[in-house]
Length: 155
Image 1 (cartoon, one colour):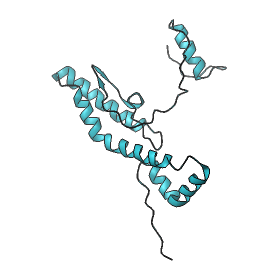
Image 2 (image 1 turned 90 degrees about the vertical axis):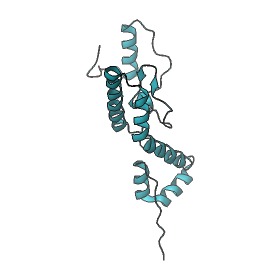
Image 3 (image 1 turned 180 degrees about the vertical axis):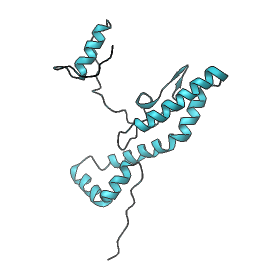
Image 4 (image 1 turned 60 degrees about the vertical axis):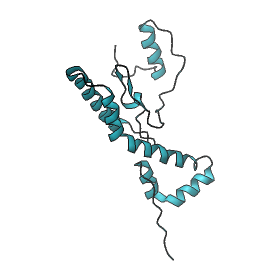
């Protein structure tokens, strides 16, 4: 059963427990609290006859948590691979080749930028220094998964 709204008095955890109970399962015990999966791109998204896409595949833009564009693209690619597999007996590994060619470089760069930025966010003074150094344009670049460029001014 699905839900189009959250009933009064329920949060997402409560709805999950209600759904699980309705299916005969115990309450969830390992809650992630709906965190966004941010990490390096995985090696493969093909597991036997299962193709992962979007957040389930960890295809999230590491610098901003965005996942709708990557979910749409990877879902489309996975669907095409599944159709080719069923119609032409094409190997599902073609999906891995395609998503890596299209999404792999940008996701890898975004993860490296995030790792670089994480070094500056451990303490407030470091964060303030880093923000002053890269400025608004640098932060905008990082959010868009580009390396910030610092242009030195001559006096």
